[in-house]
Image (tube, rainbow, N blue to C red; front, side, top):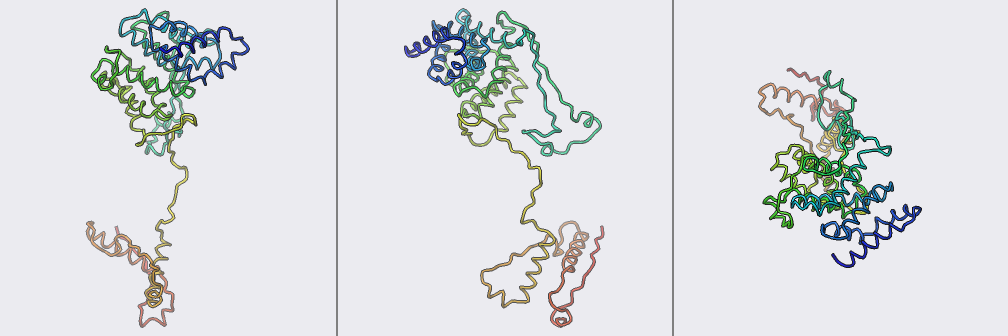
Length: 406
């Protein structure tokens, strides 16, 4: 690690210890803008043998339990990197060098599973009903939904899924490791909109490394350092996909695409149905081109919503437009000389399907139907001149009533 990074981290450690309580709020507001300090803290975490790792983890935990929202989010941004360092050290079976990281992860977990009064927290998630529109879908776009008695009884009912209460943990073991890490990643995903770009990049990178280490794809990705396989759970992979889905639309297209492909690769090897379903759904909903969203602007996901009112084309062919065109064609036949003088003005012709009486494949019935339609269209016309004066040169047009036999 460079001496510049060491100096920045040591100054950060000593500054917070001497900070008066009245200045914590303003200090927390300005802390997120210190990009050089954040990069130095990432380098400290990436070196398990660093002497600064233990005091850094201790101060990050002090930030988290201080109650200040800005300090809490400052600690949360390092969670993906802390998880990777802990899993990498656990895979190499060098647990002594990961003691401070394990203590920080356990401290954050034990603080999150209880409320301010110390009672166990139960999280609830409401699953939206497909029969009601949302920003992601409209019932009309799904197709016709059969209104059965069972469907009507379930209409308007919301399904709520509960998570918790979670037990407190004093240490991380092989049995509870991913239960704790999955919950921590859930807390991280809840604050995704506040995470800086460097944190999203770290999330995508550690997801790729966790999924391919120890497998043939590691040689393709050229990841070094850990060659043994890291076990993962299905729920942990689903939480990884949640963060990656957000990174897609917030300036990290390339890293997110690589991470999603690696998660799909690992899910296929492990035969995990949940991450396979979520990853394939995300992959199918992605746009064809790369998203170039502004990292500092509004962060959102563009969704196409079906318009509520039906749109009628201005060029729609109606009975009135057909009648108007036939009037123009009739006047053009009478005034041939005038039409010649018009030059470039061309009146388009409209061809009506099956009015010529051609045989279409439905036999004589289709021919009779076409002839009746043609007679009906021709019969509703009215001549522009007096039929008594033009009876010699033009046959009289009478109104006829068409009869369609089925």
